[in-house]
Image 1 (cartoon, one colour):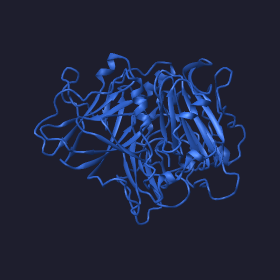
Image 2: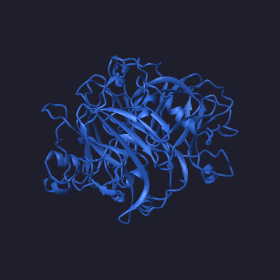
Image 3: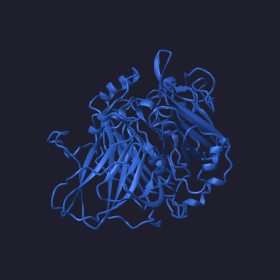
Image 4: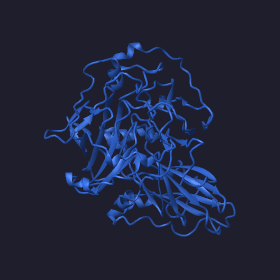
Length: 528
């Protein structure tokens, strides 16, 4: 499954814990993808059930609303997929499992932020950085007023905990660190990693990491947990730092002193070298007993190459748009997947260019024509002035290279062709490129997008169509609860207008779970 299950609308914050099971071939089917290219929006007051197979990936993920800037209003939650019981963890079982959401935060409503972006107004400095929606701790009395509610994480001395940290923000890269504690990286977005200690980690928009943190300090006082902005150059940003508290059960007093130092902002290679150091644990089993490294991606012949160049927002026909290869995505009224299923012509074109064309930028519904079981190389070239994150639904891809400057054919000589980490969201630094390799074994229509919400909302996305030419069971059929809209709206049946809330916070059944039904109850009238 993809690391982002992009639910259209949800009013609840849930943490789902799921056991990985063997079953059908793929991680997720595009009928359950929850983005505008594959699903119609869930009408206000309706319920809709997501049903997806949990297989081939384990680890830390999250879901969020995917329309109309709604992620800025919240509605996200964590998803944990555990190893099957017969497959051991590549580390000792931690004493506890802690999910942490870090995010930039604005007092403006998501509607106001959306309107600003439409008018070409930069999002600017957020009003704060929040940790699990709370904070910051009042570490500086001159910056923060008294009475702010902040997060406290309670721990026992000597024990080791798994921290699953997600950047669920709008557009800000954040550096995560815990005062006087090492972060032992063990997993990212469904892949176990080579275990390495970090004093801090840059976590870009949409990315997820798991760290083992051992409570090996004395308990003379509490410790700061910090999330601070990265790649910003205004002094105003110094006022927006998220701070929570790590509290030992035998602590003798509050956290004190200065916050732990962030990386040097003038060291432009620090974050890139840190990202390059993250490698796949090729000897560990994950959802399957065989080692992850048995998939020798470096020996597979590439069948398609796309060099995808982004540009900052620009005026096209009098409106602000962002583009990939000169095209700003135009969502059709009938989702692409439904149009494909019912053979409706004229909804989209399979003509997304594999490089920037010598023509003016345009707004269009142009999608990538992928080759089923092909092996695609995608190079993201960032011509913007900020870090951008890119995500591909339905797949984990191998991050094989990144560097500053312009990618050339010779850049392939720097690729990691053995243990580049498999994940689904990668950062692309300003004035730099990132290369990924992906095996197109999952039939469907899949969203490729910027995770930075302003870039995504203004059109920086495309879709990859992967069609199996043979008639078999590789793709899940149209579900019975499909919602119809656009040209097919006449097929839609009414649904009782009711709102139900599930009190469940975890789903786990190692004995018989083959698929999971996630019931989402909606209160969305104010989101329109």
